[in-house]
Length: 366
Image 1 (cartoon, rainbow, N blue to C red):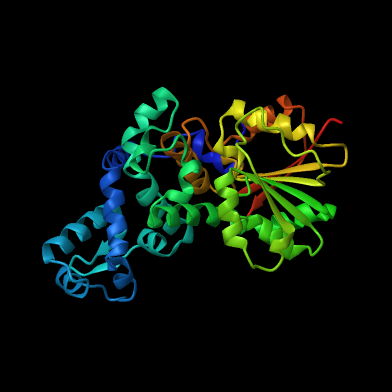
Image 2: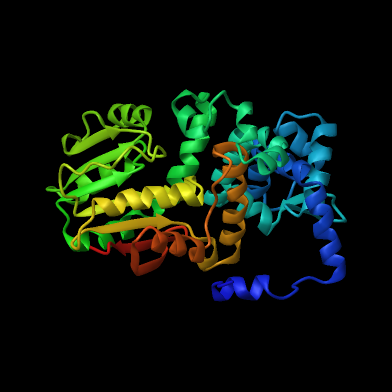
């Protein structure tokens, strides 16, 4: 298995002593409790309060300032002490924020991940075993009655929808500026955005280049949402939409005009391998020797830092339990193999964009 240098060091040799390994095993066993305690330490303002008081606070002071009972404050603080998000002075019994607590409170990625896991995933993950055995998103019923989560995005409860889109946009937005430079180095006049969702990338494109015309290909309900979101914005008149079920192999991609660039951002990870191959085969049919397909994905094996790979492999199980039951965050070897099977060739790879994206530059065989 190919791994980046940081991941090879972390994943090919034992890193922990027996005692630390045992602690991690118990940490996993109480994972749901750890998560909810830590989420409430943020929600109740306790971590922020400790951050703003260098000398620390007692249980009674935390309880008073956060309008909690001393019982509630003590339970949360003692649990957080053993989790590792707070520290205590043994002489004064005053609690302070640890380094881990600081990241929990301040790191943007961690904030987004906590909201996403609580609002979107938490209840549905009870059905993960069922999803793995049956190859369907068995946990999605916790949110609504749809075949996949993508069909229900426009109908999710407001807080769930907000957390889903915040999660989706956080990871893609940080990479857009670098990705635009890569894509527009070819000076495309026409761009097909496959799986363009609410038009966030399309708006970036029409702002970056005043001549480019962008066509978004996505589910009809997503095209409707895109039109609502982009209505009246500068350049929106150069964004067009075509609604179709991209998983239906009978639905061919538009061939009525030539597209200089075809773009797929955080799109292929939403599908299983056979579905990806079908999508790429239909993409290849509308490409010529001058066309280029750019695929932006967070490939877990190419991450510069180990925590990113950890997050991505855990996110894979969101796709299993909640999204569609058969997709994941892919290892690059798997994605390259599928691309070749579809009759396409990876011409270049641009790594370490934003929060850990890679952009694959792909050409056809024509």
